[in-house]
Image (cartoon, rainbow, N blue to C red):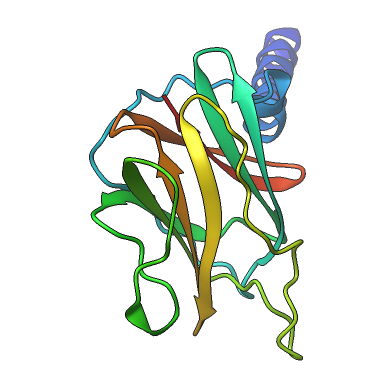
Length: 175
């Protein structure tokens, strides 16, 4: 009877450790893989890190069947919201000029993209990848813990958002 209890205890411990492993490393086993459907409706996820994550970089890439815009952060994942808008507002509420026929607004909160001296924490500039879907990515602002970007796209097709870890990234895939 004692051997059976040890076997059950060992089995439970292995199952628990396998679950922890899957939770920690499961997404990274297939980088960029996502079963999330593409959509046109707004999407978002709230996160409440203790300190506002710092934006480190923004990159674009063409993938099989879609384009990807990846936002890399130092620290925990920020909350995010992605939605189609008629225009992306920049500083002072003026329309941010963007190439494309439709516009995605990407908002991170809490997050920061400027240091205490007001300098960007990431290589600031327009990303015009010339990809099939993503036409241009522009920084729209960093104000009171909210960082915003505009993505000009070829048309109002579906998008999805994928969170990744090690390092912390939020990727927006556009079809």
